[in-house]
Amino acid sequence: MIAHILGGEKPCHFASPAAKAKTIELRKKFGNHKREREAEVEVVEDTSNPQLSKKRRAIDRVETVQTKLKVFRGISIPFNDEEKKAIHKQFLRATISANLPFLWVEDPEVIKLFLMFRSAAGDIIPSREVVGGRLLNPTEPHRHGLNSEEYERVEQELEMELKGKKVTLTCDGVKDISKNNLMGVSISSGFKPCLIDLYDATADKKDGDSMEAALGAMVDKAEKKYGCIVTGLGTDNDGGTKAGRVKLGTHRPWILTFPCGAHQGHLCLADYFKVNPNAKEISEQATELIGWINNHGHVRAIFNNVQNEQTKWTTHLVAFLRLIELKQLLRTAAVMKCNDIISAHIGAEKNTMAALTLRTAAKKQIEVIESGDFWRQLAGIVEDFEPIAYVTNICQSDWARPDIVLLAFVGMYLYFKNLPLAHANVSKGMMERLEQRWAGFNQPLMITALILNPYVMPVPDQSTNLPIESIVDSF
Image (cartoon, rainbow, N blue to C red; front, side, top):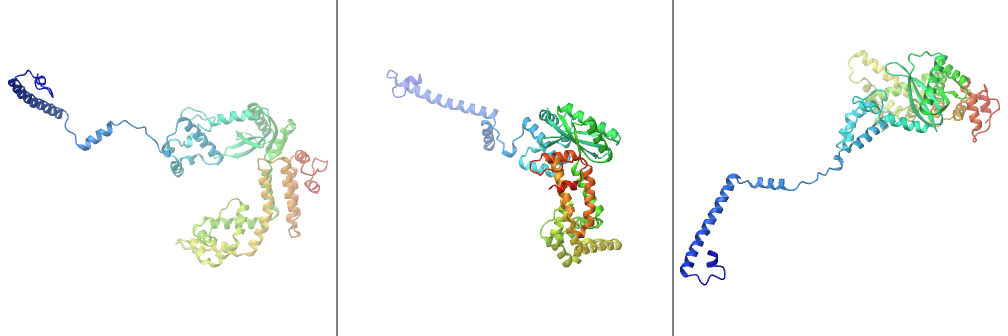
């Protein structure tokens, strides 16, 4: 009624002045009452929900905003199951390829390195038990009950690759940490060798018959498992193994047998020391000098200050070559820093007798460095070492063939044959010993391979017990 009587722009024309006055009074009354009710409602709301501070309201507002997708930094992305499996396999392949111990995966510095690439790397790096167990070992179940994964994969690939192929089998004996006699068996096809077995020969006799049976079992196992045809067998040339290999070749004439050329190369170095005792003495002096420099940090620091670079030693030949390169620098340091070198070698030793022993040892090495005769003889020995080292490295290559092994030994024979007259005794002694080494090879196999090589000249028709001298004369 109030709205009808008073209206907005058009009030009721039929209302009396008294009605309009009463309506205005009621309007004021109801208007105030409405504001009071609104106020009361606000008070009730404040009582049930206390007024929040501005900071709290800001937090509430943030919490009510719709959540966003979590975006990882590139370094923080976690690994899925497929990635974990692939990484574990690659860890095993890297370990075997680099010939690393299984415990390298648990080395703190290695883990820190991987964490620099991915912060989640710690969750994926396998333990050494996983690398050497579930991933590698085919016979020892992992603690989770899983067998080797990578081994089975490689075995399947190898079976597909070797099926129906003609292959060469090689084996060599080693001793494990428990002194068990083990024989590693490798199979080669297309110049690609693969380790396929580790034969425990601890309980076997080392006579010819026992070794023939063991080698025959290895051949049969490889042919049965991979479906291949073994046409070549190589072993070392010690007594029992050689006799067993020869017997196996007699009973299975389709298998070409041969000794390991790399072993023969190593034995040639021993032959060289026997025919040249002075070379053995000089080599021992050089080896002792190298060890003395490398094993005494303070002494080595003095040489490094003169040398201005670190010395890296690898094999004996490379070490001797490096020693000759540093000859002038070492001699300069020995002359100018003699007292400093001796003091550094003695160090903080307080015991009089021990200090005297250290002083004597230091003076001995300094005398070796200052000796011109030592350096002259060492240079000659290094020249004699080189052809032996070449033969050894050539013969242990994956690409070594019978004709290549023969040519390598011919080259070594030519070197010692053409030594100066001053070294006639060494020349004669090495030629005789190389003939003995050559007699242990499968000569028909190697000469036939040489004849079939289109890049070399033919050799004499005789192919049995042919002296290496006659082959040399053919070139």
